[in-house]
Amino acid sequence: MELSELLEIGQQERTRQKPIRVHCCTSTGCQAANSLGVKKKLETAVNRNGLSDRVEVVGVGCMGCCGRGPLVQIDPENLVYEEVTPEQAPSIISGLKDSSVVEAQPGDPEHPFFTKQFKIVRETSGKIDPERIEDYIAAGGYQGLHRAIGEFTPSEIVNEVSKSGLRGRGGAGFPTGLKWATVAKAPGDRKFVICNADEGDPGAFMDRSVLESDPHRVLEGMAIAAYAVGASEGFIYVRAEYPLAIERLQKAIKQAKKYGILGTHIFESQFDFKINIRIGAGAFVCGEETALMHSIEGKRGNPTPRPPYPAQSGLWGYSTLINNVETFCNIPAIVTNGGDWYASIGTEDSKGTKVFALTGKIRNNGLIEVPMGITLREIVEEMGGGVPGGEVKAVQTGGPSGGCIPASLLDTPVSYDSLAQVGSIMGSGGMVVMDNQTSMLEVAKFYMEFCRSESCGKCIPCRSGTVQMYHLLNKISDGEATEADLEKLEQLCEMVKHTSLCGLGQTAPNPVISTLRYFRHEYSELLQPETINV
Image (cartoon, helix red, strand yellow):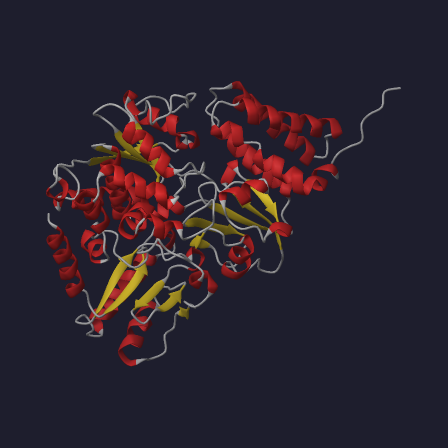
């Protein structure tokens, strides 16, 4: 396919589209609130009102404000309706015809929840039909891949990614360009690209939403990566709990093959790339890259010590590039707009944007994409609308590997370094807000129970240490512990952190360490005095 053909597909799609598009969210969250029933009623109302020549109902991906779904948005008027029921849906269409009163609750598209966002990864999420490749192409999709193959050498692509300053969005924040350069320089004719979609943090649903809303952006990012590092085969490792994401990925791969965008001689070039899907059983440890690769190989998903790193010896011993969903979704925009453009967004150490799943005790929850450097206060109080009926006590970032940041530090800017300085991590993007009724000891117990249950059991520090820590937390919670138990808990934190085999164990103590750092009094006030033997 030539560029002119790609552009022609996009033009035909734009010509086909009706002047008014009624977007109805069909992602998992809104489907749980019967958005498919809403969509059906909207479609029926369009026909009954004789508007099918200028109005179309489009099932789209996530619009962001998940706590107020199902959401319906009218384009180009930019009208938003929240918590729409099937019974209210016909009034939305009637309102388009004769400006009659709409029964559904209007939303505010000028609220900071929307206006403070800067969308790169989620640029077309909630605007296109994720099940139609033509809709993605009409929005400029796959032009980045075409440009990469037609205008750049592989090393030039790696240089652009390095110049962008993009760091891996899976949690560790490793420089993406450096990882790509290592794989590109690795010897051997056979290499792999893996998309880590094994999202497992409690409260996190960024990757699921992106996969459901814009699967072609993931494929395009992977294909550009494969061209840059010299790979011809890729895998998407996604957990079985994400059936809609899997279904849409399968459909997207099939469509891309049909148009010659995946497969052999992509865009009439010598570049070949195929993508396979591997479905994980939901073990948290398989988000660790060596465990993930073992799972793809058909082995038990246990981590192994590094080095060698996957870039040196990865899948079946071949050099392998692993990035997560969000990382790959940044790539098409970097190729299209240049690395310097991307590097102009964010802070000195953290470039670009970050997608967060904003949840917990907060008025507006859902998915947000914000520029690096924005403060936690802007996210929680302005975008999230603060805590209903209370005050913010803490914000937990980074999932079970992260930490709890007290309200006194809400002016901390969101960046890799600044979050680390206050005892937390960026992680993959989970952000849980807690109010002043929340027990931080119970929060630490929750995450420790999660880590204890998800430990693969391979190394003793993690397998046994998380169990012992969980028991000590219970003992404190039950009012049966002494100062000596608290000291033992802190010693265990250090031991597990420094001697565990993989990142799961090494970071498991973080919620305990951070709650002890900022909320130690909640532990101390439950301790019993030491027994004195006479």
